[in-house]
Image 1 (tube, rainbow, N blue to C red):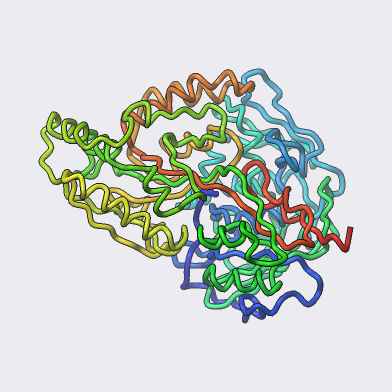
Image 2 (tube, rainbow, N blue to C red):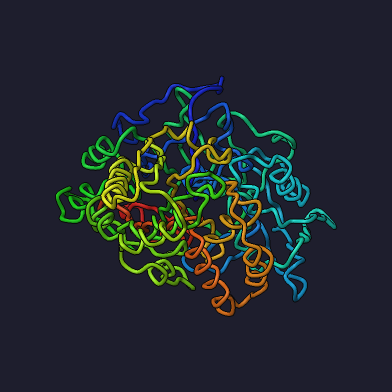
Length: 534
């Protein structure tokens, strides 16, 4: 979620139609019994990202959380588990052994929330539109293997892939493949504004001020045809300016659920029961944080410089001093909770070793100290990000091998600058698009990677990734996936730092919070209910 990146909320500028936010962040509570979910995520509109709620542009956890509840896809992830199940489709499956032709049959009587019929023509329109718009945020890369889409009749869709891809059904569960109304959305341009026309379990009413989404009210969609049975007729998402205000709202009972945005200190208070009536559920997470190197930038072009940084960085100290128990050191781009993970960076570089780093630089003829700027975003990943980069700066400078300055940039400036390669080294976060190791590898290493990284490895791109995608039985791909992780460790185009734990804080009367996050960490708002209503 970069969805996912991870990943990509956007800010202020163009939007002309705005509503005054009523009760969005003032702790007013819900007056209609709706379950209220709090968030510090920012969903904003800017000159370079004018349509934060258009599936052709949105590629971040916050926006996807809204889209996931309002749009249908051909396939979706189940309540728990990793194998996709039909959503808008009645049936779906590959029609060949090579995993190159995917055929689906839609459910009968599908309609959008505006009453328009949903047919195979809308599915074809939706998939082709994402590829045609090819927004710079990179969500189109999830569908880049689609060669052509055919519609034999109003209920059947045949998707031809350019190359075999056993992970394609999982990609169809993401909002990148959301089915939109071809009578409402334009084919060649993103849908500006904040209205949503979908066929998912909920409709959405948005409240916006200063080009920023302040509140979304989800109401059960009377036109929905599918297997999801929402436990609540209404769910709200409220977006707060800071975690302190959000914690106050949770304490007062103005919001019911929070699943991200709290600091380690706040989580500790919740875990010790300091906030009455609230319980904290914590589990191993799939979100990662990492450094990106522009391998064509003069300062880090020499692989020895990147390898030396990998030798010096102390992940254990970083996690201990900044993120405490809410994160764990990470030695691969694939987190420990995902199959095929291997500690490639620790195997390659061991524990921090300044002497070994010095030897690397001397052998490569690199003069020290290496002057380097580490850039990070100040307002996207939480207030601890600044502390994290100060810690990295201290570690690298203390080695005597580097002279590092750090540079904080607002997300609305930072994200557009990334694909333009304006930073030699910078920090990013990532949440999975779907629960498979491919989502931690292909988006970063293919030619059309979402960061526009110049790093290329012919064996990875032309041999290993295509080979792993041919394996429908994913366990057979483990060896090649681990080889890719070892190659990343050797070349260091990316440097994994840590993976975060997941948590859900919920008031005592809320049920279903154990199912709030699916196996790709996407919100399943329809699982939330009140004990008094059950």
